[in-house]
Length: 324
Image 1 (cartoon, rainbow, N blue to C red):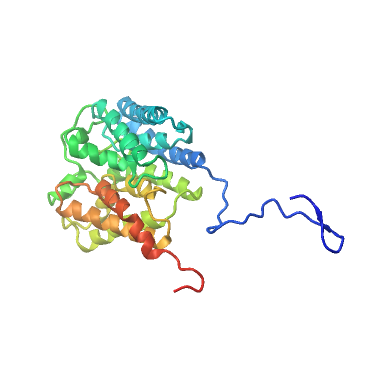
Image 2 (cartoon, rainbow, N blue to C red):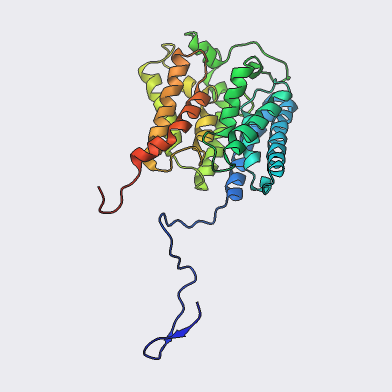
């Protein structure tokens, strides 16, 4: 705004450049989609590094295939529909990385290809692209693969890259037995599982990084894990006193609760909505683990709660000042 002369002949000073007239919410941050996605990638690197260390280079190949197919799928779709190619925002990289970490190292190489294409094209782009998908793409792709090729999703390997037939801790607990793997090995990650879900230490370090960077909030992870922990104390699945620690440290709970469940697009924005979302995820996970056909239920729980997220927002949205 240029300087002008007011009615009294005095010079009027220009308004500050940072003064904007806009509707609420009035939030100003320097974060961009690219910077947030880069933070998520950095936070997932410890889990990826441990997965490569424990399962060998095949784990790296699975993750790289998943990431490359996700990026190529997004670029091809946007080119085909004459849209601006936005692979530089790194959102497709995060989707491919998350899906790759959810897969066991023994899957066939076509599995991450199919999963990445489904996540990007069907779940993300068909609904309008980033910010418009109604469910988490990586979670939806994992559920799709579990339903279509369940035998591929349990091809767990050992350090030598050989397929193992031993039951996972969740399978053992579902049968009413105590896990044969010690709690120390569960927390460290010395157990069968997907590439990025076995090490609680690596996942916790990544979440702390995101929390310190203010990329994620505490409401969903705490209520998600806390709900499962409380039920495990009150009604342990196998009657063991250590069921609490076994339930929390086993399976994909920490990977899904700390990362997938905090997706901006598919979770409520209100604080109360996030708490309801986390409690709901915990309850559904426990129901599937205790009574369902699958030993693990975190992916199904997040997928269901993604669809209900708008409802939770409507329940907990703040009222206008002076309104009812």
